[in-house]
Image (cartoon, rainbow, N blue to C red; front, side, top):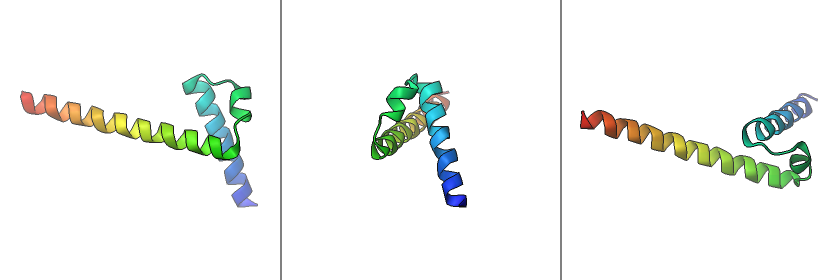
Length: 66
């Protein structure tokens, strides 16, 4: 039962994030196949990780130029 609870919470967290931060409609999200939602979540997560790494690299570069 706890596993189902966690997956429901996870689903609604993803639903909220796609709606709030990426302006997807609830219909668009709910029409995705479950694996599509996982793929999109992974792609966005990878993108955000890359952007954060780039931001840190830029900050380090700027700091070394001083």
